Amino acid sequence: MAHAVESPADTGLEFTTSELTGALGDSVTVLPLLVALGATTTVSLPHVLIGFGIFQIVWGVYYGLPLSVEPMKALIGLAIVGTLTYAELAAAGLLAGGVLLTVGQLGFVGRLQRVVGEPVIRGVQLAVALLLLEAAVDLSLDNLPIAVAGLAVVGLLALVGSRGASVLVVLGLGGVVAVATTGVPTPTVPTLAVFPAGPPSVSAAALEGTVAQLGMTIGNAAIATALLCGDLYDREIAADTLSTSMGITCLAAVPFGGVPMCHGSGGLAGKYAFGARTGGANVLLGVGYLALALVAAGAVLAAFPMAILGVLLVVVALELARAAFEPVSDARSLALVVAVGIVGLLVNVGVAFALGTVTVWVLSRRS
Image 1 (tube, one colour):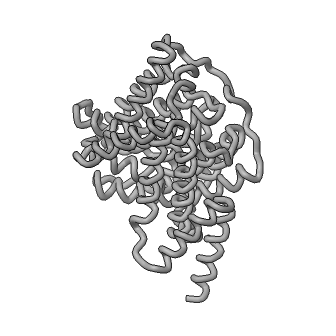
Image 2: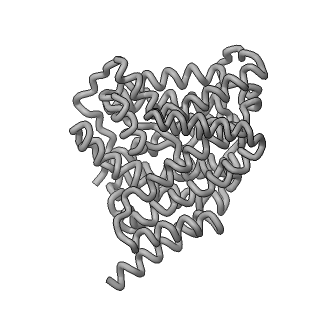
Image 3: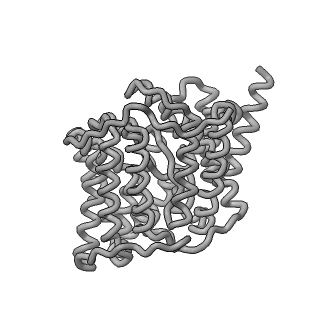
């Protein structure tokens, strides 16, 4: 049975202080990852920010909810640590978009998640967290005193109950240092071009990354987000509908310099926790991303302190690892999560995903 993207009946938007703080809550993990991606790959950060700005607004208005639009963390994480080139990331984004659109239209999302198994999905999250943590240590060693100072700021703000704000504060401090080094950038509208950072390249790494990401996306961005829409906002939005809109997003954004994006449940929960109740939060955040794209010049990004970037990645990695372990409730699942995470760190995320899926299948047959 086909599942089209159906706009909810109630799409009222509000533009209040609560919607604004909710929007900022969603940017806590998005901006550090985008800055890290821009600093470590050939991606065009202004084009990436435009993609996020446009689709924050599109889906906020369409659904009337503060749905999160965030990076596909497995793919972005693999690109940051050098496992995927930008060309391979673009290819993986298009492949993931095509699969998500297809399975969403055919109503296959729930079936795919049952085949993979949640512990494997959580294990992939842990593997990406460990890879990001490894990259964070390398970047922090670039200037250890600055890294220590950044961690101290994060720690102090966390102690006073502002853990989320700490990431934005550290990111802001890094931005101030960069602007002080290069000067205030002149606002520039990015040029409209197809694949501005280079054409996609399909490879074994791109295929492995796509498979691993789809496991996370189906579980966390489609099914878990659909459940949260009901729990937090009393709205029924099918997981297959969310899969379809994520597929559209990737297929539309990647060719114009964007990166693979999804509707993360963590981002939706973050927006709710910070006060967002309507798609107005998305509109406000989208406008902010579009404004930031005008001044995200290459010189400013190149001057961003790598040690500060390392601190930001530490925070993101720890949050991703926490999310991986939080829903685990039994020893066997815990062992599988840890095993998939370690294999992903030491060998390859795609191999870890495949081995984990086979293990789940064998265990299910025995039971």
